[in-house]
Image (tube, rainbow, N blue to C red; front, side, top):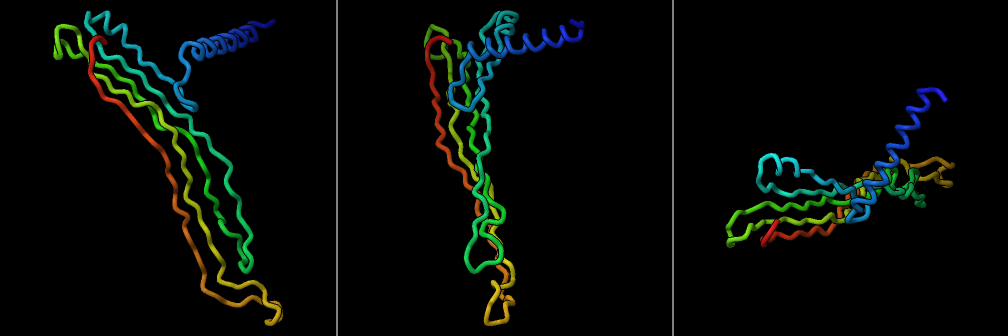
Length: 172
């Protein structure tokens, strides 16, 4: 086996092992998100004091299949010439705990914000147009007649339910 082949194989095995360990250590809190812990332990040890604990969840947007154009009787162009594309994903999540020394008593207290990742459903804007001609008319020797052009914009859609929690308590 050549040295370049061995190096490539070692890099692939290392990447797969790191991905497997990362997936086993911190499972995603919500489907479609990636947990991102922010390591501040070294800062805490080097400064000799408590530092905030921070973790985030980043969403993974997943595009869906758009509804294709539809034929409508009496129109030359299909309805929804530019279809709306659905995209599902999530809002980012946040988990933050910051120390508040002796604010609520003798113990080391904390303030915390917990905003879990929430699902998000969107539809991109679409376009519906019609030509300035009617369908072919047999009474007019098969020729189309003139009419006013039509154009419409399909509004984008955004649906989500977000939540969060703000609180204080003992310990970090």
